[in-house]
Image 1 (cartoon, rainbow, N blue to C red):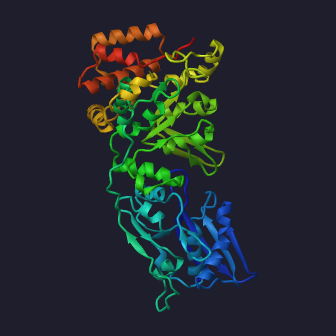
Image 2 (tube, helix red, strand yellow):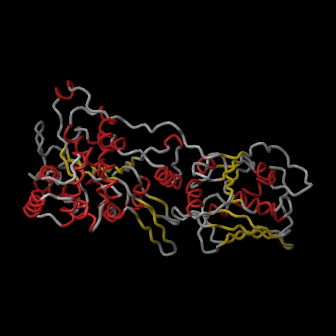
Image 3 (cartoon, one colour):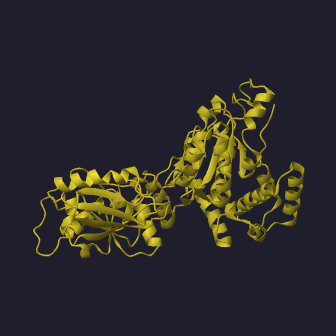
Length: 510
């Protein structure tokens, strides 16, 4: 047979559109042509496939005109994931494997020159997309990638270590087996690691009881947080331990977060079901934060999906990068639109930001005098736009601790103790409205708030006096709802509103 079809998948966002590798062998001037909007890495597959077939003891049709078409032609294809399907297509077209047996299988894998299979990024995203699309097929993947894909429940995944391992499974009847190796073919079953996720403990942070209270509120309601304080006050330590306060991840959430990490080549099986904490440097560009490229790839906000995005030195980030966060903070998704391709990535993260109050960091400090002029302080704080600050639910000052308090203070509450209280409050909100308080939108805010008369009057008075926007008022209302949930109160009382109001902190000026 001179024509064969082998099935694989491309990656466009979290989608995995089907790709059919069509291989045709014809008489004529020997050549190897690859068409179908292939990127540079895919075009280089010609040399990898040729060498892998020859070094594996298989026949490469040197005297034929080989045409490989990657359909659909208008879908971009990148990376070396199509090496294995191309090699199998050539073998099927030349009669070395049974083309009919390839039906019902999808293949992905990069080939070394010796025929060994190397892992490819996005295997988990590929398997998850097949499940969501309800496509019943067998996946054949290299070591490393197969273990990722097998995490998806009900996925039928086979691991192959070498090209000959695959060839041996699809030989035509009455054909001599290929040369060794051929013992690396294994069917994998879905089995997630049983170890519980490990997080750094908040007990390491001495003092700062007020800030820990705000972290508890943020974890219970899914609220974003801005910490303002001098250098060395513990902002980074607190932020890096925040993920441990969040509820345990469900299987669906863990799969989605792991699939995004797999797309970026960052998946680590040892971190299964551990909420990610992204910490991009303040020199990160807008594209690095929200994603981009061609084809589009996820940025830091998507890699922090179902986890925490920690932005330290917030005013030092490029303004364009910070402004790009405004829509994802509201919608929980980011759409990367390019002239030829459009991709949507989930980005439901909790923003934890930290900053100094001024360029030198000691504005309002009781231990050191600030050396910044009022104009410098104004310019520094002006790097953060009002609309961005408006979208951050909780603003808190993190004071520096005197040396004697730091050295003599006993360990604080552990992460597990605070997390237990946060979980109870979040479960109350989930039972009442089906989502965390921070996710309430529109009429659901009024329907689920249950404000008492005194609380409503206090909130209205605070919003008028402080000049809040409608967004700020609603965000304070949602914070008050979370505080009421932590207290076990079915209604929001004035004390809950009073505490929520003090967390809409305005940056101080000299």
